[in-house]
Length: 223
Image 1 (cartoon, rainbow, N blue to C red):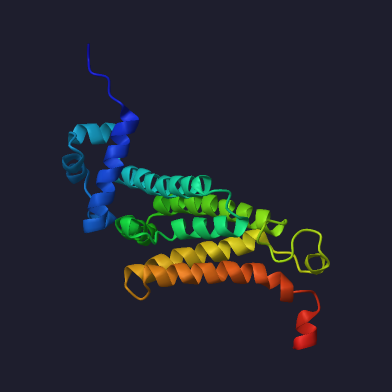
Image 2 (image 1 turned 120 degrees about the horizontal axis):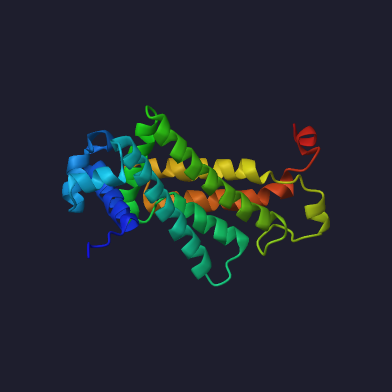
């Protein structure tokens, strides 16, 4: 009988090879022939999985995004009943790829983002990844704002009832942009991973402190 081929496993192996080569040569320097050699499959096997190099790169982008999302969800589920604020901080830290073990993955992701500036198919896939991450952050922000353990005043208190409501989508966009930017700052050595984590933590703390002061009429009284 002919040997059964697990095409999804092969595609993942190819994606891993793309990431290793992109880390060394950048996405533009990746060739299907080099990927085949690194993945220890034939060039024909790569071409049967992906018709073009661009299609292969798009799959690799998805592969990286799925790994980050999977780690983030695993960290949230493994934490012993984290508060919404703590869960949000954990999620943002995973997105920022601050763990030293993920430094190569961070370099690859930024290389793909740079290449996406001149490749609409890559840009489209990265936008989808960002939209999914933003949606998760917005959900965590909503859960905390609705009275999680570390929301400032708890549900139904007089202080919280007079506070200006948070816009979860806007705050999620800001937090995602901050986490994404910190990735670059750590990679080039402008910040340490610890400093980046402290920056994320401070942002989350300010997010929950904001309703205490950002109330309707506050600007008029203090301006």
